[in-house]
Length: 195
Length: 329
Image (cartoon, rainbow over all chains, first blue to last red):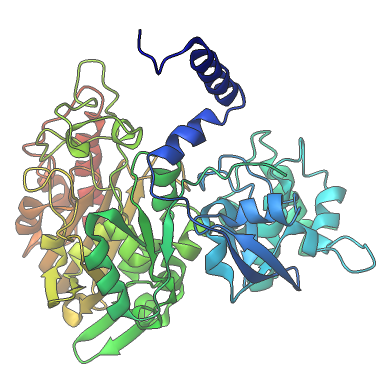
């Protein structure tokens, strides 16, 4: 019998490997083994919603991950995590970006605005948020933070968009409830074109 | 809070000088990955379908940004975003074909960060390849798309050689039509390649869609005055109006005088691995007026020689129709 493969070692091995598989970490563990030495976190400062936030960031870390899991700004949603659905849309220097497809290390000198940063200090909702409420734009609400951010960006560059322009501007935000027309009503109301 | 980002462990370099980026690209070679907007990158990494060891983030290099007027045209920095292309006055005024093409790329968020270099250098969208299967393009020895059961509605009708994937870029056909040239730098110097020769098919190199090699960086795209303010036509047909790749696209440039077409270039996208010059169509329309009769005379010239797969026969009719529509404007 192979002296290295004792009963004790065998059982320990089974426990570890199944624990890893059950926790869902197996994928990451096996992946980590085939890669060069794990990269280290670096402390950086980023400007989020007007505040300077100091945070330890991995080289490959996405902005969505930093916002949600390190800064606890969970208003930014992760849907597809592949830059397809738009739920993670944030403003970077007033331009819409998919936070899941942006490296946190690339926004060091720039201003990030998430949906949490839109309401005024006294807690009053941003006009776009209020218009979406008034028009009952969201159905399940998961895509709403992204839709709000895209609308805010649109109205900054084009305060009176046509419905077609709004449709184009929101085309990078999917809504699985299909509430697109309700969001467009919200955009029209927020831009004062719907009384 | 314990949680896992889907991104794999990978090193990140953020050079601010193009020379430093070139040195890194040379040193890392195929272990490195050039990062522009990153919108084609993160999918590959998150899916573990490609496993580079380091990203070289080019976004800090200011000299690669911006659109400049030169003595013989316009030079577009490699990091110019598609949104910048769409809104740039020079491009809108003289090369609106390129602005129209850039405007049809993906979604607003992607155009805001997606770069012109990234758009032309992006990899093909064949889902078997993207899935990480060991197909010809991934270094394996079979094609999953070109089989009796393969789903190949979006694949090539021309120029297949083992791989049947098509060029996914919307700007590429426009750049080929405008006779753009690509400026490529490496540590050993600079070379300038015509857009038409920049894209290569699987018969030349099955694992790369461009002539870019490890250690090289596409630093700018030059548009000559040849086709400035010509008659342009761009159309992209896709399943969705936004955030979709072309089923077939067409970019056409025409010079007219005395009521007839003096010269023209017609380029189709998404019909083969590279943008396809429709040479027969070009010679058929030269010296002809832009009329319905000329359009009808084109018949099936654009699709001549096509070899459709099981599910993409519709592309023949589509490319023929688009050639006619481009002619009529």
